[in-house]
Length: 371
Ligand code: SF4
Ligand code: SF4
Image (cartoon, rainbow, N blue to C red; front, side):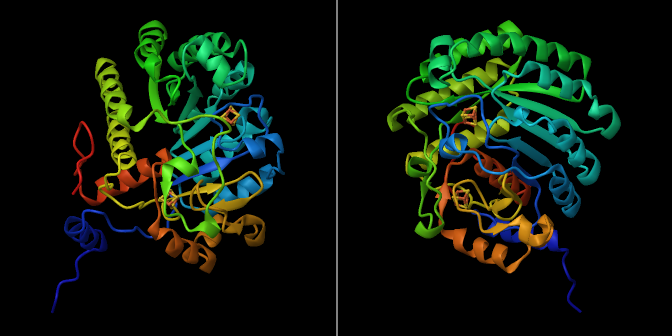
């Protein structure tokens, strides 16, 4: 009688034969949750500026509770918007996911100006009760003049620096909490990478990571026209392609100087740079619509931020698991197998999936090598 290999082993064997990876079963591990379209800034690089200018409805806490209870425990819940701290019930939303979903890690993407609300959330000390992790990812897009111009928010740079000092002190008080600064690299700010690192890492002691400015028109390929989101920055471009390799090398040096806190991110950035330069990625988009997804503040659900929502949670009584496994979900997974993009969240989660399938196989340390 033939021995039946465990499913995970079969998958691993298949992944070894197929370097592009095996599409995993649809079970959410990482969720991007928009809790509001409202924002107190109007950034040049914001992909969602149309929604920010004309905010839609927001799901109630009750609906969010149903969502949290309906799915298996998440690895990461990324709460975003708009500016999430504009929601007065943000603390309850975070607690709901810790309590009803047992989410391992909650990350809040914020522009970092609403200090009192940020502090109040950390001091709830949810980590002590639920033993999970909380990260604030705060955007800082260059030195003072550059940041304030890109964010169209005069005075915000200085305010954020003061807030970062307070948040760094809070992270020493509360072990479950940390702050990370994110810089969106674009045409006008990439020359400030090293100076920013010195200011943030040496000056304040806060970890600092990077993203490439994104937009559907310059960060994606082959998305079927009828499901392609028309999301592009209001006014912001990538650096020129021939500058990308040296930008990558400079960020790599910064990561090494800071003790390599973002090695996985560097592998992801390497893949993104390779793709932008026209080289194939070493793996498919393995996560979108399967292990990773997006819920907008009106309750619509999408496989990723570059494709249109395919269903509304209101039609499923906010049972996200049922929606995810529905025929609509299955249909969308089939439709997105042809597209590719450099959207950070989905390259990172696909990289994680691919590395798990290949038990530690990695794209090379400098830039991703092609299979
Ligand atoms: S990028 Fe963030 S802070 Fe800026 S307008 Fe968009 S949602 Fe608001
Ligand atoms: S995240 Fe994946 S599914 Fe979405 S556009 Fe990019 S490649 Fe396609």
